[in-house]
Amino acid sequence: MKRRVLGIDPGSRITGYGIVEEINHQLIPVTYGVCTLTHILEFPKRLKEIYERIDDLIHQYKATEMAIENIFYAKNVKSAVKLGHARGAAMIAAAKYDLNVSEYDATQIKQAVLGYGRSSKEQIQKMVFTILGIREELAYDATDALAVAICHLNTQRYKEVVDRHDWMLKR
Image (cartoon, rainbow, N blue to C red; front, side):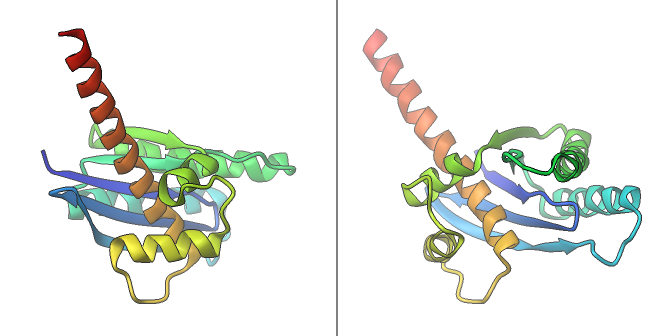
């Protein structure tokens, strides 16, 4: 089965995205970038832009599933609520296409990509570049979104191996 995962690093001002496809256990970057919303002053219009951009990505690149970063602990409640709205806008776009949406904490993403849950953004970026063979400069938001997609693919592959092993033990 062809898997094409849209990873999302949500934000109310900058939302990172990255689509990674798994072909014969190799991870291939399909597209990646950021949706910059700082020029849009009204918050509801920023949410609409996030929804439309994610909708376009899913439609154009035929994503089969979506993975999104969970809300982290925030000192500023207002910021956390805005981040929740941005996540919701992206999730509604995925729901339009009946995509399964998986959510991962930042530490889970770092653990799945680098093996250490407290890695720096620079370390994550270097590993994402290594895994996907990317040689150009990217914004951290785009790299984080690719890391979310890689985390999802690695997590799903691990679950499949465990399920297969459990099935064999029950025979």
